[in-house]
Length: 602
Image (cartoon, rainbow, N blue to C red):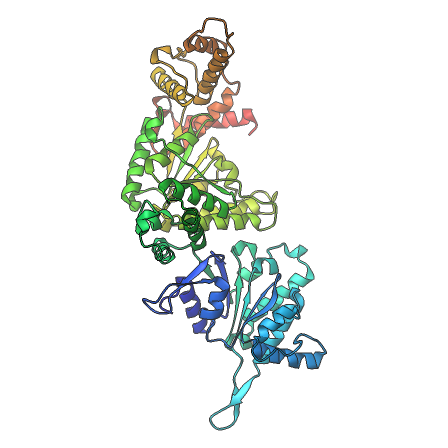
């Protein structure tokens, strides 16, 4: 199968080895499968089930498919299955075979149209099992006239396997599911089936949606179907747009550039994107590509990731000079493709209001790399959370190069041991994230950024070198110049026309952050807007003085100090620390952190 997808070649090699006859196909299972019958032949597109029946299982005599919605269908060899059903009906007094179809009709199709075969798993799989085992005893005449074994070559496709064998707590698994589980597991482990020309194939989008015993069965091969890479996307786009003679008339970029822009999408989404534009006489512009790709990826992730779109660069960030210098260098390395020199990710720490999220947004704009934020992927159903996370990873792998932002990371990343309060869910989330973040094959492709004001609540293993290599602490502005710079930047962000000389004076001892400065600006804007219409208009500077005079610092000084000090302890490079913290004795810092922890009841 020289022109088959990589996963199909892997599956064929495993089956030919004779060691495994049951496969679980997972991942991008709802997409087109592209296939060439020979080098240079036209590209053909199949739904996965059709590709299995017509290409992968072409040497098999009978191909049966089953799912809970459609029941049993014969994709190939309907006459043989019909013959078996007639014998079965005669022996058991059943009526599965129905009326004999006309000579020009497909027996399998007649069975489907007649709705004669059972749909419920217990009876349907029992019937398929009987057919498999009956076929094992078929014989034919040998060269010397003696009968020799000639088992029927059968392939069975179990579609939507997650609904047939769902992940569940063994204590709450119903007897019917247990019976189905035993039957499917038996197909994988029975030597008489393994030694015959019989294959069973389970299809599910996520491994984590399937029963754990099936997934962990050593006699079952797990084969992942990935989203198409850039070369496969290019090949598909060329085939899908072959009828468009003047491609430049409908698209701003050529086909090769378009394939790079659409990496991370399934083929069917790419087809929809192009058709949506062409059939509505809409030009494929860069804005159209960005918006539709964003829409499709967010939809395929079920809203569990969100694109962080930024037109800003690190020039828009006030203060944090050493952090900006470091991040600019990494952004340059990303643009040059110097993956070996890049860290696996950042841990950005600091008290609330220091601009952690804003810094990430500006870094994404500086690097020119797509940035997505992990949203709430937790679910109340057993196994659903892990399935959501697996689906997210699948999309990230296909996006080429991406920054993954996890805000409030101490709440999202899970714990190695959650104390049994969530049936082990937090531990499983932690394990999946830790494994993915430590995969060095992703260096330079998937760049992780965790942000939190409480890095002490993150598991140590997640923060180690090789996952989040660089820990960048952010602090409130320390000098009068830094405070003035930040205030002017916030005024520009909030569209307040303010001159440098109009910035209020901040007392040297006042520890004030960006969120508090923004509060002062909003208060001044409010005072300006509620002026009497007939009163003389006062400049904004007057209202800033008034807002500053009424400002009261946050009451949680000790908690903010705690956040500052744990950020100091987490810092991986002394250059990130302002002089106030750079020369502190770490032993004394730890003592003060312990004191504050006791006072705060942590």
